[in-house]
Image (cartoon, rainbow, N blue to C red; front, top):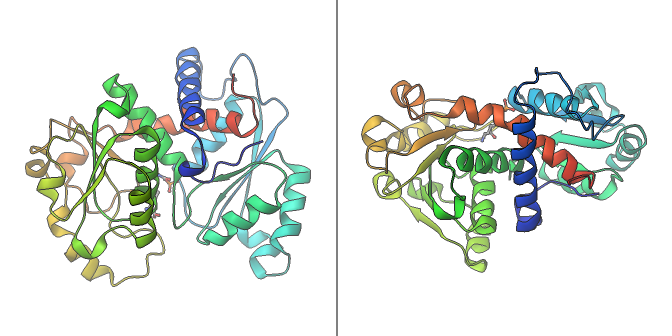
Length: 308
Ligand code: CP
Ligand code: NVA
């Protein structure tokens, strides 16, 4: 079995295998309805247990559809229903029980340590459905969307991130190193990625560049990604942070400095992008959201060693 907790812990070969499988599966079920099961039913009889300690719309629905389309079922736990949330049961005992009843566990958490401890104590695979430091399923799916739209390998493209140095960006940086693509980051000076991430960039031969001016970062971009300035549970002076990012708001003028780039946004959105850009012809955010289902199916199969 394999955990899927960070892009950096998975080999390029396996990441590519997941994308290839997703492409084939998506194509094969072109004429099937949402809940119709893939013909080969590869996860028949399997139970995905998912738990969200933070809000979610897309991740919750897309993992549900993913396991159902593979022939399995999903059970969504509310953390407040578990003894764990009151400190009345340990992570290790909870993990044992999850491993006894289920086949795979997906966790969205505000506590990075929980990802580490669950991955240690579970004897079934763990998927990180967003943590303070990463959002790997989102980014792998975004790589899929980028290649689907451009019909080119991501390694041949200039990717640009305009926005906060958050969990989504961390996973994008890891992807840039794994897939070897140019990544320009545009963010205000006081909002650069953490020292740990900067060291990771330095220690791996990558193509990541950080600009503190949006117009410099976006130059020559084929794809522009962004995310909310204020992430869930971001403990900052919100008014100040939004003000600090004003020059990084994606408007038509800023987008026009790119190579006619298309926009991706993991959603939900805040005020980091104008309506004109968000609902404009170069916005691919809805296609991006739906692709989560397809890529996560192949992530589930990877986790259970069932990738063809
Ligand atoms: N992009 C994303 O993870 O959305 P949700 O928070 O709605 O799951
Ligand atoms: N950076 C955002 C992503 C939401 C999908 C957050 O953590 O809230």
